[in-house]
Length: 115
Image (cartoon, rainbow, N blue to C red; front, side):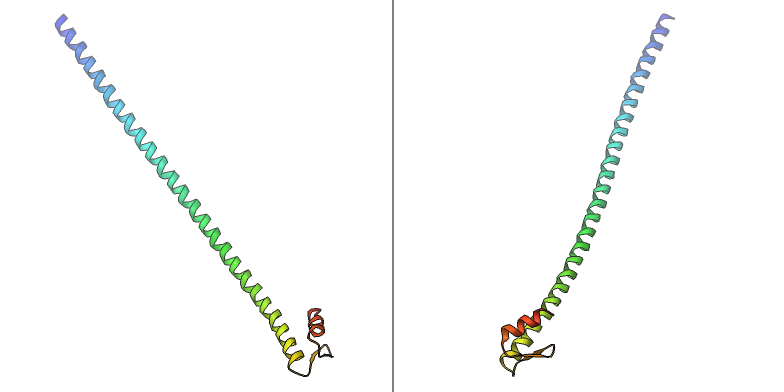
């Protein structure tokens, strides 16, 4: 019976070793799966942040474009006013601004700038 008891102990030791190996293997797989899931989560969060930054950039670019177009339009109106006064003061018989007649370009321009 002692031989039988010794065989049972050896089987029990082998069973424990096998359980330890299987448990270690399962823990390693779980660790790698957790690391992979965390890595995927970080990539997804980074992609969402990148998308938000790109959207904000597009909005800022659109706003800057609209402001530049508006400023350019205002400048064009100002330059057209100067051109009309210059042309009238130099080439015509003078410029009439607010009912007053000016033949000097500088005076006509100064009066036109006050408007």
